[in-house]
Amino acid sequence: MKTALSLLALTALSLAAPAMADETLTSAAQSSVANEQLRKELAVLQSDPEQASEACVNAMKELHDTQGKIAAAEERSSSADLTVAKDVLESNYENAIEMCGPDARRICATHDQTAKLAQACTILKNDTD
Image 1 (cartoon, rainbow, N blue to C red):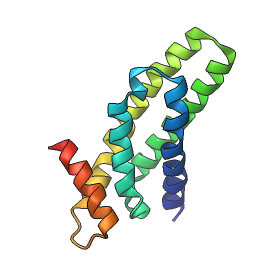
Image 2 (cartoon, rainbow, N blue to C red):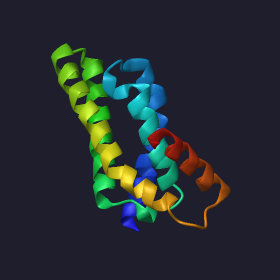
Image 3 (tube, rainbow, N blue to C red):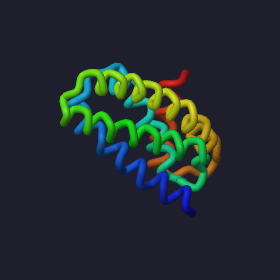
Image 4 (cartoon, one colour):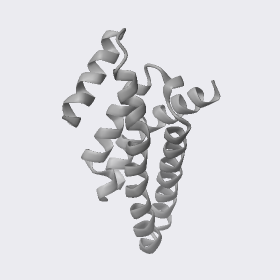
């Protein structure tokens, strides 16, 4: 239950953060490709947060920690800190996609899906084909 609540909270932050982050970040980590892929995986995981692995939840926590560091670095306008943080964020996106993707695909393999889940799975599947 704790994992599911953590994932729901992180998912809510993740889905809200890109709007803010798109205004401030221009790094490859915040590119539409990585951001959209992760959003698709999280859309599937929202249907059954209990299915999210601890690795996925931890990857999301690391991603959000780095997003917070970037926001703080931007406020300080330290380009050295910002460059390092953006590199870490890019790695965090890749890690979150790698950790959460299998959980999302496992949920999509189930046979009794809601319409919302089926749509999220179709979108995810079309991008991974």
